[in-house]
Image (cartoon, rainbow, N blue to C red; front, side, top):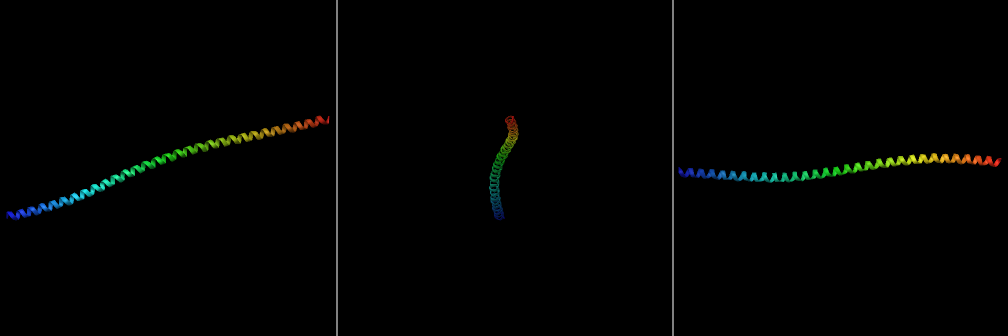
Length: 110
């Protein structure tokens, strides 16, 4: 009976050792998957940071371009105003010249 109890106890020990080995393998597999998930998370965070920085750069470039467009628009308006002023001055000078020509002709007639 003692021998039967010993065999039963050894069988139970073998079963428990096998169970421990199975659970150990499962635990190692879970740890490996966890490590991989952490690596992926780290990579994802790096990529998110990189995309955030690129987006920030692009937004800054857009602001700079908007400022340049505003500056060019302002310059264009100033140039248009100068052109209008020059056209008025030209008209005034042409009128003065025409009046001068008329007075010269009147003077020559006398």
